Length: 348
Image (cartoon, rainbow, N blue to C red; front, side):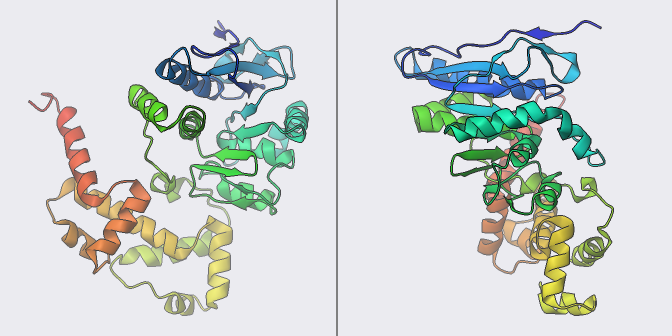
């Protein structure tokens, strides 16, 4: 099989001279190749937007190994690990049923390198499940962190000293940054561009790349059906009861009584199995239903709010915006514009 080879990068975009931010991307066996180059490519675009007189980015693909084969058999041309301002650690394929110990054990050189870089003051960033490498290096102890919603529960269980925020796209805590799944690398890159070059350059880069620079949460993307199932019988029963009637008022005491437990026990067991609260699940279910109604019916926003259990349209609109990044009327208009654009006749 032919292997695709991507050359190492020593700079990204114009202005990568004096004052350039030095960014190293840590490549390792079977890491996601797209995550190795996704951040550098967006920084390249930002450098062009900022112009030749602005300090740019000096980007290197680095490794503690002489050769690295990434996902898909892509052979990477890497540089020796050296001093950088920011070290980016990409993610890797991690199935919910995978043996994580077996996956992490061969990456001891990378974990040691991450720990050493942090010790000298390098800002360290993980993409997606690269957070597990940071946690193994001890960088996430007593820090807030995030990762892919699919693996957030495992991160919290495996590393109890980590304050996992499963709803967040990007979390930075005292020099250590973690991101949610895959495309959240662009949310991080835009934040880095914003800090280095300002809001205008970040905004323009996002427009050129067709990257959403306004989203704030990964909650809208969570699909409970994809979450690991073993040991979640209790929470599944609670979720089914909550989903039976989305218009029913949320009553924690009544819910706990229905399952014969205290409210404290209900919250603890539900959080242990899902990583969130019953109310958070109910709100996410209501928002999913509301999205469907906004996309497929002509009901007013107030009618949609009532249909998913909110008497006050303002409260509903605020919740909907928090979950999706858009108010209901804006979401409906954007969805219908997109539907017209992708109609077989082009919407003409």
